[in-house]
Length: 365
Image 1 (cartoon, rainbow, N blue to C red):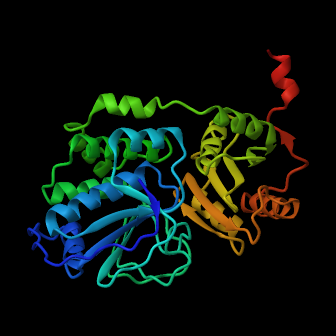
Image 2 (cartoon, helix red, strand yellow; image 1 turned 180 degrees about the horizontal axis):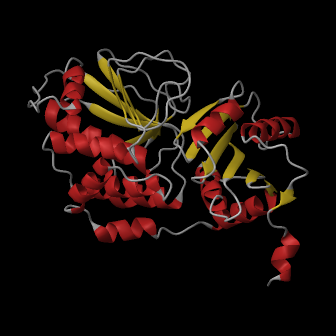
Image 3 (tube, rainbow, N blue to C red; image 1 turned 180 degrees about the vertical axis):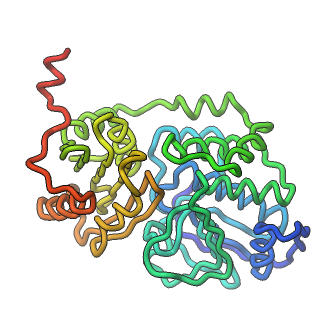
């Protein structure tokens, strides 16, 4: 990985793709075949699904089209397992500050959509050529030359794996391991595996490096992680079966989602929203149980007019851009988010209660 701006060299010469019937992968390659180079762009702070899906498409384009291709994302990779994945498997992803579109280059959004507002194209006048994603769509309609969006899939990695299989491109052990981990981690017990998910898991399993997979799943945590986690637990307020947590501090973007993942496993909760300021933006993660409703709809209603977001039926997220470089969410904005969140959850509750207090922890030591 490297942190830099993105001018890329374009190349001449295109290898004609092998025909593969009427598969979507072939239509995707046919569209990209008209361009001289390709930029693959994932959402900011890429997770395993974004990294692995982009890597698979990077491999597919390189082998079938022979074109210059780069895999880019904004933000950082902070979550312990995700950092371990990058360290162990070494995907060709570059973290960058901004993106410039070279002449005659195709732009492919991977694991995100133009309306999501959490990628490098958010504030630049660059239109994507193609979108490959599995998130529920929100916001205005958009037009691209190719789209493959399958919200029922557990992960975009399933779609990318299908492309490899359709085009008879065998993944390396490193890529297969990343794709398998991506499918498992994006499902995370909330998203039922479809038949294609199961088929791709079985297909990938013949190449997976299970020792590397174990290293990723048991990645070590930093001391800062435990400090953030303690503050988050103390800051969580419950309103019946609904929870709200404004993290006083977050060392990275992914702790927001990790706290939400942990809180929604509380047996008395069905809907959880966590938020924190990270690098001058308010990042929001929403989680629901099967009884808690559509997480992507809840985050969309909560952030409408404040920011943007999207996701899946049980896992979603969003972002509010702040005008100043604040380090915490102001009391006014906290109040607005709280009001909107409870309204989205159809809650008109009495005063909230802390999920856990420091004295409760000390009394049980």
